[in-house]
Image (cartoon, rainbow, N blue to C red; front, side, top):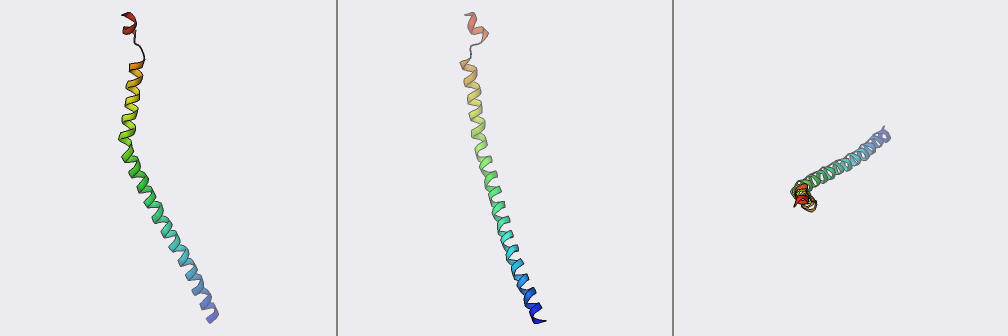
Length: 70
């Protein structure tokens, strides 16, 4: 009976270690997701501004029909 109790205590300790490791992994994953979301929120205005600059630069570079008439 004592041997069986030791066995199950050992199993309990082993599974508790696995559960603790999973909890740490979950916390690290959540922190990474938050950091990624914050990075995207921070960079979006810069991406939009860069896209607008490219659009306006393309419009200025291409001649229009009105330019050809002059």
